Length: 524
Image 1 (cartoon, rainbow, N blue to C red):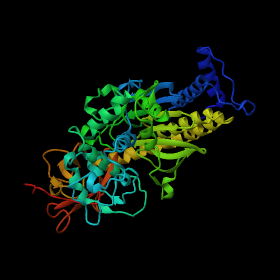
Image 2: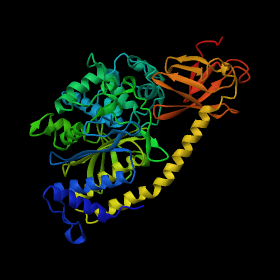
Image 3: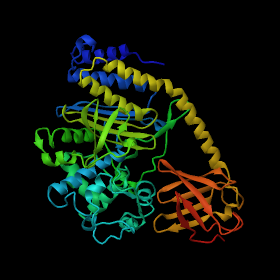
Image 4: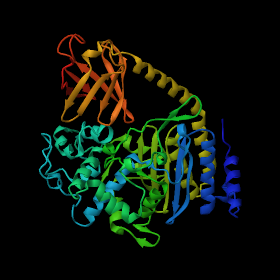
C-alpha cells in the first residue's frame, strides 16, 4: 500500500484553491520556499492521507511561523471505542514535554536572582537527608536540569509517574534511597525534574502546580493546560490506543492527579501548545506583547551540558547536542533546533522549533504509528520551509515505510495481546493463599494482592492494587516464580520471596522492580 506524492500535491492544490491560492509544485527547477498557506496545505494533506490509511487512531497538529499559527487541526479519534472525535478542544497528555514547563519556571527563578542555576542542592532543598556518598554542597540545580546529577533513582520516579503510592510531600525523604551513578555522564531520566518539582513545592503553598499555573501558564494564556486531570471531562481527553483486528481500540489511561508530576504531568490543547512554541521562537513575545523576559527565554535554550552517550546524540531524524533548562538542544539537517518530546504508553508528544527560522511544530498522537508520524510531519514541514525540492517525495518515502510495516505491526500487537491475556488467566503455580495479602514499605507504598475469584484457596489468577494502579498479575513462568504487574503504561517485574520452600508458607515479601516490599499481614 502506498500514497503517491502526486496525491499529496493534488490534495494540497485543492485545499489552496478553496482558499483562493494557486500552489506550484516543488521541483528541482522551482526549489523555493512555498507560501505559508501552501506549506500548511501540503502538511495537512500528508496527515489526512496517513490517517485515511490507518496509521494512527488520532492526531493533533499545529504549525507556527513568524509568530502566527499557520495550521491547527485535529484528525481521527480521541477515543475510538466510544466514537469520540479528536477536536481542537481535545486535551492531549504531553508526558515529558512537561519538562519544558518546569525548566522554564526554574529559569524564571534564576532570572530573578531567586535561585541561580549554580545554587547547591544543600541550599535549594535545605534539611533533606541524601543517600550516603551524595554531596549536596557540590550538586547544583543545573545538574538536576541537565541530567548530569549522576544519581540513579529507583523509587521517586515509580511513585511520581506510575503508582502515586507514596504521597508527594514524602518524596524528599526518598532521596535517601538514591544510588550513585557515573559521575560526569548525562543520563536522561525524570529524576532531576522531580527534584525541581520538590524545589518549587517550597516556593508556594500550592507547590509546583501553583507555580507553573501562575508564573508560566497564566502569562502565556495557556488556559487549558493543567496537571489537574480530574478537572478534564472524559470526552475531551485523548486516550492511548492499541491495535484491534480492524482499526484501533482505546486503552485505559492510568494517569491520575497523584501521578501527574513536574517531569511529565500535564494535558493541553493544541492551541495552548502552539502558544508555548511561539513564545519560545519569538523571545517571549506573543501577538506583539512581551509576556516573558527575552533574556529568560534565551537562558532556557542555552546549553547546560552536552551529551556524553552516543544513544543521546540522535533521535530519529534529529541531532541532539545536549540539554538546556527543560529543552533538548540540537539540530535538524544542520539547522539549530530546540525540542522536547514525550511518550506514555502508545501516545506521543512532539514539540520542536527552529529559532533561526521562527518555525515550529506541535504534533500529538495516541497510538499506532502515530509516534513515528509526528516526526515525519515535523521533518516535512521543516523541509518545505527550507525549500527542499525533494520535500514531498522524501515525506512520501517515510510514510510508505510505515504503511509497509503496518500489517506486521498489527499482527504482532494482536499476538502479544493474546499472550498477555493468557498470562493473566494463568494461576501463579502456588496456592493463592500463600501470596494474597498486603505488602508495604516506606519507599514503595502499599501493594495488595487478592484472588481474581472470591471464595477459593486454589491457584487462581491474582489481582493487584498499588496506589492508583489496578490490574492482573501476569504469570510469565510459574515454575520459576516470574511474574509482572502491568499498569501505568509499563510493566514491573515481580518475584515473591519465601523463608523456605516456595508456596509451603505465606510469602514474606515481594520484589517489585528490584525493590523489596515486606509482607504487612499474615493471611488467615
